[in-house]
Length: 115
Image (cartoon, rainbow, N blue to C red):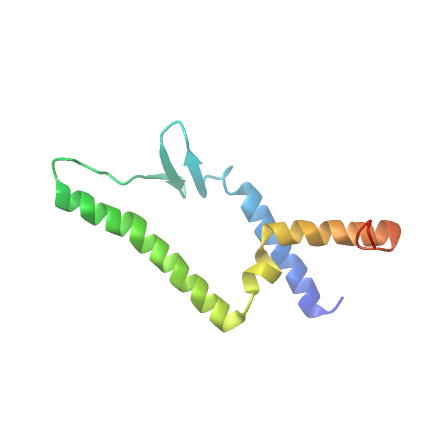
């Protein structure tokens, strides 16, 4: 394997570990008993107060729409700048599929049972 393939393997493994450990480490999870998200160990609520409509509207804009818009904008920029970085290097599903294919190739010489 060349340098780029080793880097890809490292980043794929590291991102998969982060994906698996994120709920355990309270990096990002939905707590069903409390009814809100936990982000970096802190509760992420909307703080909607029926008595204060303007503050509730501002909370919804800042805590819902702004993060979604930022994630979409960053995703578009990364796609434009680096191509299919997430799908090729970071996607947890893709890393599992490539691991299974490499194990199958090592065991049978073919990447799948149907080839």
